[in-house]
Image (cartoon, rainbow over all chains, first blue to last red; front, top):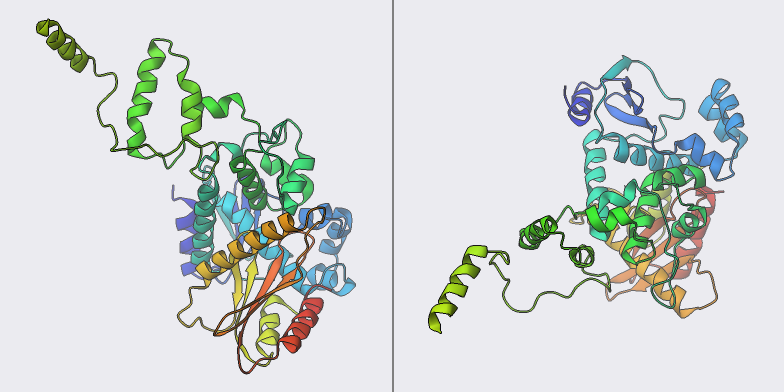
Length: 293
Length: 125
């Protein structure tokens, strides 16, 4: 089965108009090959954003959807055209960020179908993909591990310093975080885009404001882990067999990004290439030393 | 009512305007740009501007203790021109930022700020 992005690129080439349903994960609405709206089950849509931010209750929106649609929404004036466009823009890019990488279920295309909030902004499919890739790279630059994106957000009990500045999303994440809510749960609850909450959570992790859960310290492996660390990794797996416990702390420290104050310093001198557990070499050394005496 | 696209047309009508861009501060994305870019990579300049704004916000938060920092606009003057940035607070996301580059000789800063304020009021009433 073709992945979602090639399917979408094909529909864009054919200048198709209609709705592409991706199982329960979401729906992509196209008009003449350009994306007009996108829904993703994981992220808050425009309706949810407007409701959670206190602009318009969801019942009122549903009533508008059935009668009058988008034109009446703008006419009655709870949102301006600029606001609605900006909201649709944010929601669609957010949905694309989470929906496009999935592709488990069989997508079904229904020609002609449109979303009632579509037509506010038109997205070029290639541009959409490029923006998603840029966003992904930006996330990784802030904090390399993707584990935080799906784990419950747990703020640290103590501040690692004496003061900290928070932006508005970080503040909302902090006040909304329980022990169980994941970043995407929080996004729906506070009415912010999923991506902005992911950004806030990763920035907070980089600043040391999140509690280190057990699984993050033991199993997280940074995706950009370079080949120079494989020696250490081998040492760890070799050590595990002999029940060597004290490795854990060091591995966690090594995973911190370089701007983290608690990250280990860069190694001095040329990198060590020998395997520290090279038994054969040790035996040869021992033998040579014995022969000396 | 002004849409995001028309708003840039209005911004470009300000005397001395060289180019303008709408930037989403959260993601660092260029939402709209005025005209064809002339040797400027809109994507990377939007991302770089976002970092500037973030650093400014952090710096101000530290230099005015006990205050919640809320920036209305920001002005940077270089030897070639003025750079005006207007923050538009929206309820759901953002802020949305209007970036405007002005000619040093032909522009009137006070007028440009006033016009930007008016445009932002029309955009998000």
